[in-house]
Image (cartoon, rainbow, N blue to C red; front, side, top):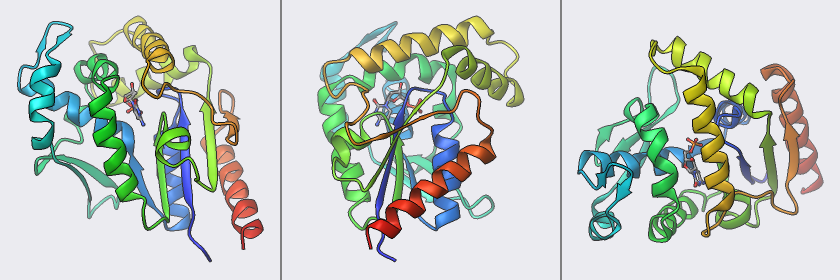
Length: 232
Ligand code: DC
């Protein structure tokens, strides 16, 4: 069967990554988490003190962008890709609230986006890929054969993210903090000048507020089958 490109875009913390990962595993495709790439750049900025409070020194970031090398390597035990920044596994570090709070600032910088988009396009060249993010169906792969735009109620997204943090042992972050972070990221993602988050004209809308993981998976696999059989 001919391999296709699957672009999954949408708001933060709506389960995109989980669904993209399971779909990729189910159909034998490679999964790429484009948000992890912006998070890795943000971690680099934090580690190298490019932030002074909320203020980002874009000049220093620009001077150093060529020194930021990001790749994904498969974890042998979980068979899932993990994010590496300059050869270091940063999969856990990029998921902290500190990174979440600063990533929208970094991902709004045009030269950061250009560098990440070029890397993402390179990764998707051979097709057979599921990539999730904000601009995958609009900018990175405008010709993707399957485009999904995921949405869910912000309260429900905050609760899911909050439960996830608690499960990981974070007992400090409050629900209100998570909810505020989600609302401000939604706003910044949709209102930034450079490739803002929006549904591609040819993307299929999926509201998963009241769907179980299994229902969602079934829905995706059905769409995949419809698209790949009609493309043959
Ligand atoms: O999917 P995520 O929450 O891990 O993404 C982290 C941030 O990166 C998010 O706030 C927006 C940004 N992002 C982006 O601008 N473009 C993408 N393709 C993916 C993520």
